[in-house]
Image (cartoon, rainbow, N blue to C red):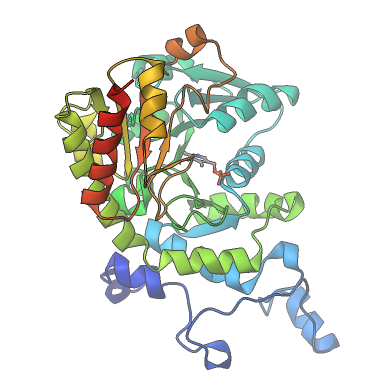
Length: 398
Ligand SMILES: *Cc1c(COP(=O)(O)O)cnc(C)c1O
């Protein structure tokens, strides 16, 4: 990348990066290349391709031009040399992990990582003789002690869900370097606007592009980013696993990306206001937001992140009855998982994500009855606050 190009702002890059100025058929928007296969003009064309003289597309599972543009744009935004787009965030995570491990390897993952990632690491990988140590998030001593001679990598989400714990990436890199192991960060909650782990020397970054990157609660997609050397073997496995994103879906990702920096900045501002409102509300016990001074990881967040993101977690006063009445009283905010989209969403982890746990098991994980995770959308901040305010009032009435 030229020096001049590097200086372009994130908003411009989210719209233009990774796409040639000269457009196919002079279209302004990115074409959806709806094809499963690519044809050769003649035998000479085949020869040029097989000799490696002419990079081109061959078959749909090996890549698609719409997808290639998305990969280049995302690599630019994250400051990565290479990028791969997948059909979902979990497809990105599982394909990446599978490409890195072999029987006899050991991996370390923090206990505050995405539920399905943890499940994959501790259950499925074990079947193939890959051992996994789960360390408590934030216990850097335990992390250091967990690393063995055969440890392949350390994986963690950061910030995490729902308490928005923030990993000290400088410390993580120091520990990893001491032992010569790789580092992977699931940076979905941060986005490349609020944190860029590669700049801290992290080896690979994953995102569920289902969230902020596409930003409209309408597609599933995933991403892995890093150096060309690290991405190349993942790309090779990806071609066998077949978790490719569909071209139309990829177009929606590119479309969503155009407003991504604006959306995240707006959501950062809205969430900070909502977090401040909740913190002073008499019916709220506690608020977790990394850019509030009261957050347990506020110091690291301020040092290593440039915005707090759209997720605000809070504990209401009262019990399960009040929590349910609060949920039932919301008029605008929808009850549902996910975050980073246009619509504000709220989840009640006790009754949704952890419905199959006993109360004791949930409480051990910190999932208490009156805990809520609010993902602010793009609505007016006053309307979000008014909706919450009304719901708090109604929740108190029996
Ligand atoms: C949603 C999410 C995932 C999984 O992504 P999908 O696109 O749903 O497969 C992984 N990690 C984090 C932090 C997420 O929020």
